[in-house]
Length: 113
Ligand SMILES: [Zn+2]
Image 1 (cartoon, helix red, strand yellow):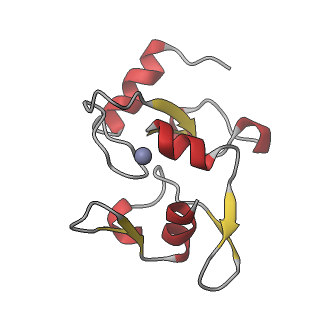
Image 2: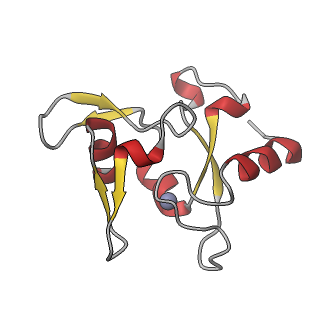
């Protein structure tokens, strides 16, 4: 798949140039950002902008082709956080030491990944 420059620009704007999973800003020169498929193509996801999210290399690498993982608290299979459908603040807490705590099953599996 290849995305158009226009699609990339839309995603950067929607994401306010921050990783949509860990909220790190993309003007950090150490990190080069990628466009992540929220639902990977192999799981039926599309190149539609509502299936695309901006992700730093770390988050995109951890996430890989996964759409779900086991909640470390309950052991239940849980879908990963979807930045196009869910609000970050509802699912995560940014700690003073810049680590992130998952507040919900979706938040926990996304952080644990
Ligand atoms: Zn990230």
